Length: 344
Image (tube, rainbow, N blue to C red; front, top):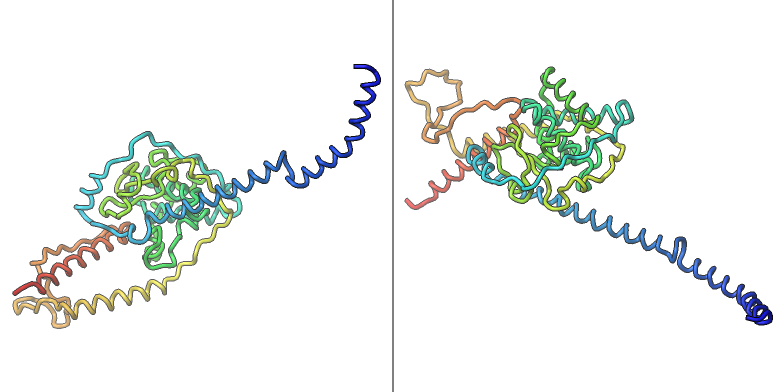
């Protein structure tokens, strides 16, 4: 290329340089920061993915609420049917250690109390491994997008309702009982260890459990992963039940609702009224003249034809035993009503 040709080419580029620069500036202004606007596109895609995940987790949480939380059977038949449900296949992956709340930091004391309560009232007489498993379920829920992202938020979820609370001791009046000092210290030790990063690998990413003497409908929907003592542990099906799904961050806010004994006293009055109404509808057997009892004893006589047997539940499992007994009584009453209404 001759010197003249080179000078002409250079002059042409110099003439076009301002135009090219203006076009580049306009392109950047139109696309925004990042190369070709990829930054904005990525943020939009990420926001949409998070919205889809939140919706999916809300749908997953419904697998164990409403009608799915109803008990199908209780007692010995429940134990047999629970045993027939197979365990999920594959190895159990342990959750990552929980280090979100520093000991002595803001919210630690409240979180420790809530987790100790869950371990004590749910599993005080279970094997030590079973107590650790309950603590693990609570912390798994703290990190799962389908649940509140605080320890107390998880433990007391639904406690404002008479039924529908996630942990029954928070809405059945169990908190009115003074805990055993020894078992409380043991529960506190388990809670402290869990908040310090101890992991109960046996239950993996489990977010649910129930006693083996009841059978909720959701037991057939979730993946059964482990049984320890009287408790059977489950995780959500699919991706929502993996360790990777435990990705939510602790929200930094721990608040323990105040216990209101008057609320449970009012509910007890309602229960007594219902029992009295039932007694009026189905009077007890007339006293036998040979019975040696005081005239003021209004207890009546036991009807042995109903095969009723008195049982006194362990105080630490009173709530579950009460529900099981209540359901058996309702079933017996329904059977009696059917027999009465049948053809003569």
